[in-house]
Amino acid sequence: MYVAMKSRLSLINKILLVVMFSLFCCCGYFQAGRVGTTKIPFKATATGGTLVFGHGRARSPDFVSVNTFAGESAELVVSRLATAIAHSNRIFDYSGTPLEVRDAIAARTALGNTLELRAAPAFFVAGTETGLGIPKPPLFLSCSYDKQADEFQVKWNNPLGEYGYIDLRWHFNKVRAPGKYHDIDVGPYSGTVREGGDRSIPATATSYTIKKPANVKELDLDLWLVGLHPMRDNTIPSALTAIHVTGDGYCQEEINGIPFFAGLAPNWAAWSMAPTVDKAAFEQGDKYDNLPAHMPAYYPTGLLTKPFYQVIKAPPQGFVHGVYRKFLGLTPGHTYRLTACLTTLDMDSIEGPWSFSLHAAPAGQNGEDFTAQQLAGLAPLPDGRMGSEAGRICCYNQNRTTEGSFALVFSGDGALDGTNDAHITLPSGVDTLTVWARFSCTDPTGKVGFSGVRLADITALTEVKPPEKVTLEEFKKQARLLKLIKKSSH
Image (cartoon, rainbow, N blue to C red):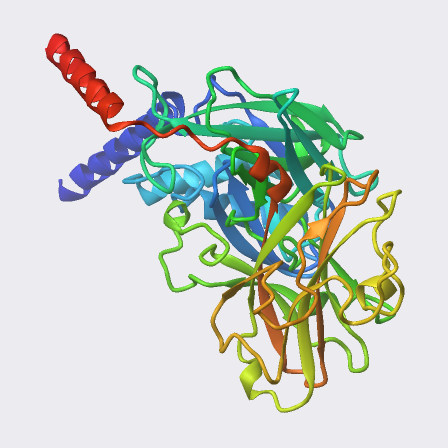
């Protein structure tokens, strides 16, 4: 009798589990039927490393990760990735969901080499895994405000032949308006509402114009860009790149906590004077690896506090190397102030000679990438300057370090180290600025860090009229009016 009752209870539990799973799928954990299905068909085999899979467009987006092995099939990777998604609350919220249901979700999500998700196509792939058909990310995302046209010009570079199309998303951040919904309840923009857009752009496009909405007064804008291969409904997304625009449209800054791809920070590329770039010398550092992994939205954002930073290890002996990025679509003739965040980590313990410096210089009239020789100071820059100090903003060495902390450096700060420190003025006809970090070290254990940059158009900022001061009488008048409005609403 006991065995029969136990069997019946087991059957009831299974039936309830099936019903729960059906309700689960119908009621919107995956938001089925409302936003469609996204299929991501990984291809061929893995190169080996960490595969990061993320969702959402936020300062610190949600993601999960799995380790892959060289030669591993796409089917095996997808199976493990589906399990990681189902057993985490990072991509979808499965709070309180039984393990059996999560396992069923994982089985439903992994279809051979294809990851099938019933959600909006706002995913990205990052990490050190570079096989499986994952496309390279876009580079050098830049955004400049045109006051006369009242619009934003967004520009970037694409890797050759990687995409079927490009997805651009943006959000204007503004003060809360009465009667509006979709409020931001946590993070640096708590108490605001967003106005934004999402556009699918042809794969060959490298620019897009965003018209400022009439109801947006404060020009505070977040942009995200991802490349997809090959088609919209059956595609592999690239890593995510982003830029934040503030200062009434005249300041671009890299404050997003987005996972790196192939060891390189979003928007940045590696350069080297060695015959080939040592890819192992560039990796992602994590300031908050001791914090709960399921709470990326609460990570602080800012050059000094963003969670991920670029680690640059010592180059092959006798060479120099580093990272660089371009800012595109700037205003010729305008002067720009550069702010960056650097750290010399544990270089105080290194006894041999070393140097870690940050540089910036206008591009030539054609806007082409600088050569490794130019970035190393061994060939003239487009403006004719040459040598280790050409375009230099700051320099660290055995005599001057950050003592293991992260430090902000600025162009135009003559007291910093007495080197080339002027702000950068673009010549007539030039709309591109190149920023680069250079590291040389004779000790193979040496390494430094770099968190990103902020670029401000100080010519435009000085032209912006300051807000009018409110007199005391006007303030009292507004206060009395507000009190009357509150009374009439009760």
